[in-house]
Image (cartoon, rainbow over all chains, first blue to last red; front, top):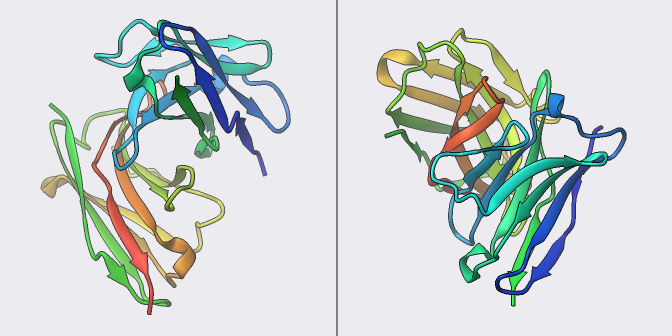
Length: 110
Length: 120
């Protein structure tokens, strides 16, 4: 069974830049997996940030960007702010298995 | 503006069947490329995709749950229903429904979620 892997936790200083990644247990992530990224604060529903690798959802600031870095999907947050402190999930499209979510990354801004 | 809202029981007993309803507005499940999916999240754990139904009634299920889960749509009522049989305490989770778009293959808008506890 395919496993999608993310860093369990990451920290960034206010104003800094951080890149979170999303990897496959076997193989490389490519645009054909349509990587998407979601932000979730405790007790809230996920919010869609990025889809199709690098397209920002409506209303998402351009501090958030998506890409493919090497064999992984990546989410970069520039100019980190206190309210960016959240859990971030990636999801990959696997054809008949519509979406496989990663385990999530808990981002701390301090 | 697209909105979705989940409804159903907050507590079910082990072995019982769970029925959740997602009522949505701001889009139609008659529109090509549109779907509604269900995702769950056990307390303190990651998101897990369960099922999706598309405008053309194509239905897809998570391989790990496909024997227990059924998804249906009622286009006239703007509702999607998830049925999960043989509930177990490990199925305790917040259940979200979400607007799915084929163009980009992603969940675009999420409901607020509903917590379902499985306990005797």
